[in-house]
Image 1: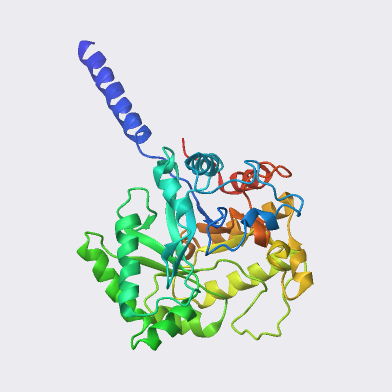
Image 2 (image 1 turned 30 degrees about the vertical axis):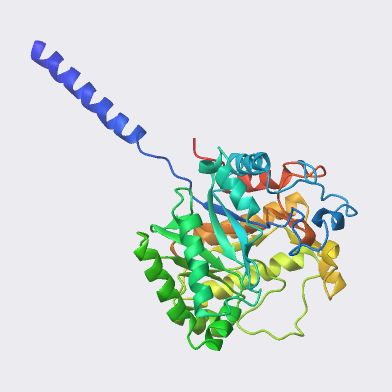
Length: 365
């Protein structure tokens, strides 16, 4: 009897150990959600020629719940990060600029994020907005990469894939043109950048091209340039391998999201590279002067339409889990001048963030 009791106790203890082992495993989310962040909400001449919120005030529905804030404030960064985390956003991608006569500019939201006590709740990355006629030389490219390494990549909260810090490139075609102008190519630039990272103790760099669904770059140019993956900042129409300037842009949010689905489908069936699925809350550029096709600025959403768009994206992630890394990137947190925002506003409050949480899940507890 004693032997039986002892055996039962040992079996019970073993079962507890197994349960404890499973309970100790870190839970994971089934999807990874990123969001682009526009760093333009501080009056910073000469880059900004007028107070940026002035153009937004006259358009109803765009006043942030935090008011017309200064994005260099640490308390603003802290609140943004907490909201992102609470509604299931895993990483934020800051638009990042370098200009020829000023170096790195509009970095104040990243600086505020890095000073925030909440920074560990959400990872951060950068989108190099390289449509500023840079880099102008190989030396300038080296300086840009050096800045990334020593200001960002060594931070524990920097967003990584397979241990590599992730950098999105806004205009791959511009980078190719600039590289050619000083006698090299993008693959050689990336090799140089990755070697510089390795010298600093970082295993490399994961470069993501933002691209339309056009055959030459997707099937040939971007893989040859040694990009690690493809995504997009936004789409204005659906494409299936070809583009011409006379193609019509969307005139409603429904047309816009139909175009997104068309582009998703084509890229997923033609790209050799992973594809982080881009999604959008809409488009209405009137505060920034409006689109050339004025009807394109009718491509804004309401929350339930945005939710349906996210569900369509989730279906794509489920269909292509390996190729998409189950990752979406939302345009945008706060592109108020282009009508692309999910940040809480006085009009919609948390409705857009709630759709993100409804579709992709909240934070892991």
